[in-house]
Image 1 (tube, one colour):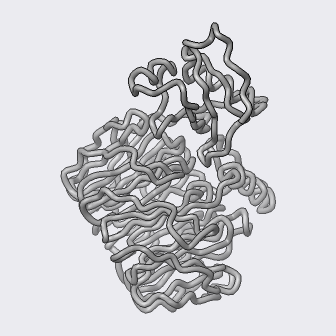
Image 2 (cartoon, helix red, strand yellow; image 1 turned 135 degrees about the vertical axis):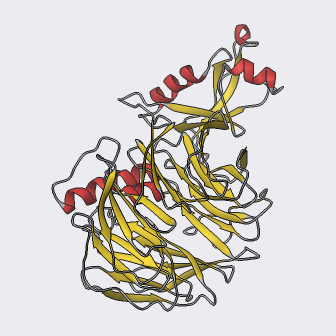
Image 3 (cartoon, rainbow, N blue to C red; image 1 turned 90 degrees about the vertical axis):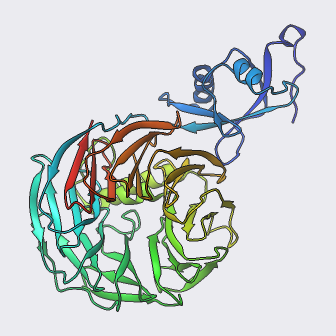
Length: 477
């Protein structure tokens, strides 16, 4: 790479830098940058080089460490030679900022057995929960009171999922049936969707940028199958068979591919129009428990963002969702992370290769839940070893371990700005972790027993949690 000779007068106080995006694509060629430059000056430079009309916030990383001070401070502290070109990764940050939740604003009784699953609607205005008492409940977030009790299941409600346009809520039970609800009325729409022979382990909707209004979703089951359903036709349209043991998790990706993980140690990739098996991802030595996509947050929220904009037609919603998806993805392929009973995780780019991009090791017990941050920059993992670990979402490199829970960590959730991470544990507490400072931000005791389910609302204002004590708790900032 051609670089002009450095003037003598600059010998001591500049350093040769190459700015790249998280995927490694250079922003221009190498350049001399004053060692007195810090994040603010680099931010100005990146905005200028990218010709951003509106100035955007960026964070900067060298060797997976965030640059918090001037370059010279970093160079001295890490004993870095100025003779080599310094590679600096710039990472776009959310323009808005979410405040950490710090108090329980209400404890809402209603469920008569453990709360097993909680989920906010894509716009963050509604909340649903599923329980061992066989009901699904919808809650009024303005008054913080029960809105509808949805009865119809014969067994525990294990899984719930909102359609990304917010029009439908699907719940799956331990008996294997799926029910579709109208969130506006709390009424069941149509008969139960039957076909699975054992309990439901996961539900995922077709992204709204691919199809609007939302019609199809996929469910996974202990019976070894995944099934694609159409809520208008009220029936199963495709059955995805091929796993030899229970399917533990299912995700419908932004490019139209469906990913299933199983206790047979494999992950299968399916195309969604005819249900053909495209690829098999192998590597785990034990059950695969959890999958997450780098695009999951924009797939979940569809067209809805932090501005609260509403949409007049399905076409308008589809277009807005497509723009959000393309912006979030950039030029990078959609990434997938898997967590397993073998204590490890794998990072995959299934569209590119059937081989993993990285193997993520460090947990001392099974990995129960994995989740990408909304911006795709981080991967968080929750384990029975009582820790939450943070990894680089592009390379899979280990970044930090969050320790503080005194029991297995069951579930995690991210704030919409990717700056805060929430965890719920068997130890009865929720904890909020600061990703940049890599330490505990807020300890949230209050539940009387194990916390099974947590969710952070997409608008960032609220956290919901539920567990063995049967209470649904709402936390605010």
